Every structure is written in C-alpha cells, then in structure tokens.
Length: 71
Image (cartoon, rainbow, N blue to C red; front, top):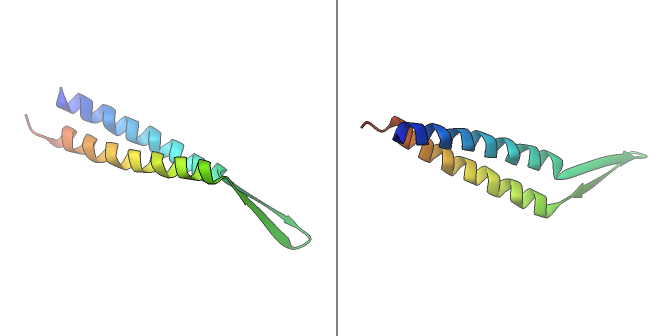
C-alpha cells in the first residue's frame, strides 16, 4: 500500500513541477521596440509558480521515501 501511495505522490510531483515550470515561463513577457527591450512580469504568478515547484520537491521526496521503503 505504501508503494502505491509513493507512486501517486511521485506522479503528483511531476504534475506540480510541470505546472510550476510553465507558470514561470508564462509569468514574464518582453517586447523589443526600436532596439529597446521592454519586459513585463506578473509577480503573483511567479510566486505561485515557485510555490508549486516547492510542493513538487516535497511530494517527490515523500514519494521516493514511501516507494523505496521496505515492508
């Protein structure tokens, strides 16, 4: 049973990691006009992405611990 929960946690970590990475990529945008680059960032979206990545790391560690634990 612990192995199954560990695998589910690892799957959740992969999903949260994907959401975090795509959130970081979409949180900023830049445009170049006449040689000047203008950048806009969404700080709330970036903070949410960092929280998702931290959650993914925690789930991954927990999943590896449970999946690797002997009965």
